[in-house]
Length: 552
Ligand code: GLC
Image 1 (cartoon, rainbow, N blue to C red):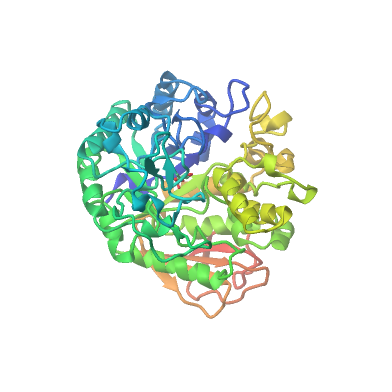
Image 2 (cartoon, rainbow, N blue to C red; image 1 turned 135 degrees about the vertical axis):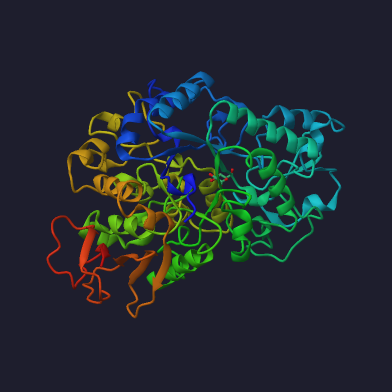
């Protein structure tokens, strides 16, 4: 067993805008995070990943960066961040920054110069083509909708994978790459211990930009299909060598679509990054046509096999780009009937997998999706997320009635996971003294940190137990390093696996249905944990949505 420090950590993701507001402007900030460090210590997490906090016009809530070394005043100052690094460090908590290097913002100095001066060095930092260049009229659809090409005032056209305000950086240009590496080193010197690397699978382009076979309506080709384009490995190797290899930092890349055989190149001790996020099951949703528990299990098992010997995943169920896990995987009626039991079951299911677990803020208190007021007519003014807006526009163009378009677009909207964190039952849930930038759900009176910390059976205290099992218990090595053994079962709605290390074995069995399940594998007599409160009386059955960890 080869110990690796970042394999033993628990990472907590903060969406700063919605975590805690210290100055009453309705938007969360760095000082708010400093004020909540005691809470993060109480929860037991080791690293906090901050979604982007650098200067930005906030078209994509910070994922459009106009200065990579300046904190946006909305979130505070560079000094605030340094204080956070120091104070978190006193609690042995590290800070992980979001690195958004596939693109920047149209307000970045580099882009402004590129737009103003065609012959400038900065013009070479982007993909800019002449107005009449055919390639700039290709059929590629950007991630947020519309063409991947937009015009500069002088008619030249520039490429953007995401919104038109997020021009892609040209990684083919060595001077650009060096400038990006310098930024990383600058942050490491400030005490940043980790990086979450945004949208990195897009950095290598097919520079012929030729039309491709349409994969979306209106003859469009989804740019998502261009991820991990051949040649990307050269960029990633250099990036890793220059920035991370010699530094004691942890990196996690947003890298969907990496082929199973390439995962060991992308992750693990010798990979480009420490780990990559595993999306195959996290991206599933009960609203999708192919959804079933059996398929969910298949994706989980398959992904675990991929990293059995090499490579490493950041395991997660929620992030700032999607729905809350209860809403994603559990049918609505069962959420009403069984309260937080199914959400605790999901927690056990992914927390015991091989990989470094990530918890997204609010997941630990079982936050639900946002309740949009779609039913009451036009809720467009309630929508913040740029991709949801893009989708609504597209659906309307296709002739769908407004009400229907809103319903479809909000069901999986990224706004669902971006609501302010409820800290207590007071006005605005203790998130802000001002007017929150996004309305809170009505359930914050009962679903908030203060209430849940008082209840020993709350989902919050359940997460704390899981965290301490992974970090402090006699089971920690098996959970961090043990083999993963899938248990293939007849039952369509149970997910069971073993973790094993030497002589030691743990069984994890999760009932993903509202029925009673009777097939508990033999040989496991002792219960380590169940998501139901109290002693478990009958060891031979699993109650609805019950999850248990058992040992021999
Ligand atoms: C990543 C981020 C997402 C952002 C996009 C563009 O997917 O997670 O929030 O919109 O990159 O930077």
